[in-house]
Length: 139
Image (cartoon, rainbow, N blue to C red; front, top):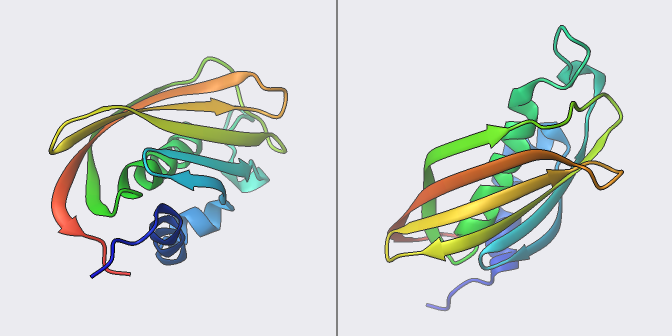
């Protein structure tokens, strides 16, 4: 059995991920240990303050984490994640999330995700830890 490419793994995950599709996420880059995703904030993603609900940006960053850490071909699941929101996000903003694995062990991967808006301002700092199983992805 051949190991699937990072692009094949991410494309398969995205095809199965109805929530990321609903968010309007576009995969710009997929590599082992790295992913770059983009999405536009829509009106229905706004909270009572007129800014993007924090869960929307968290979801974008979480998808970037998932794609970066699963691209190795082994099923990897989040066990800890946190996010900070230094700048408010509004409808029409275009967000780009870049996830990069910072270190890995046999079973854990630690990943930072930077979320930037169309003005290249950092609007989100996300850090996630995944548990990497020994189970290969079935494409």
